[in-house]
Amino acid sequence: MLKFASLAALGLAGVAAPAFAQDASATNFTGLHLEGIAGWDRSQAYGGHKDGVLYGINGGYDIAAGSKLIAGIEGEVTDSSAKVCAGQGNAADPETCARAARDLYVGGRLGTVVGGKTLLYVKAGYTNGQYKATIDDGNSRTTLGKNNLDGVRVGAGAEYALSSNTFVKAEYRYSNYEQGVSRNQVLGGFGMRF
Image (cartoon, rainbow, N blue to C red; front, side, top):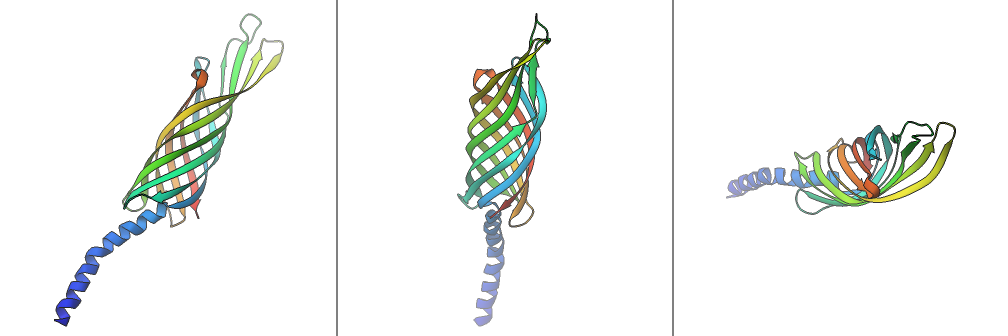
């Protein structure tokens, strides 16, 4: 009887071990996180578009919302080198430019753990992009000021846990602002969980 109970306990432990491993892997994606991000930024304004480099920081907090489901909130501050211009830069057709500046984002995300070390997620939230406008008539360049544009951002991405507290990520997102301004961005990042 003791042998049977021991074999049953070993068998139960063998079946339960993968389940415990799955639950433990979900913890790779919970808690406070902070990351540096950089990537491609296409800004579309004034009927034209221009590519640039996006860079900044992101932080947030994620919780386990099920055995493999992760839910979280996040905030982000970025800047960009993208600058969209229209016009010839002369008195008859002055060049008007909008340079993408700082962008603030706050939103939520929902994801699922795949294979123990990968988190696939979708995100959505509010974004506020700042654009600096200038006009150049060939003789002088005038700064028109800064314009803060409210918008909505949606995106999808993947995180890969390098260890229990470090990860890398790749993400695509689309932001739609007021006044017909939009952005497409693809970025990568390296982060830590605390």
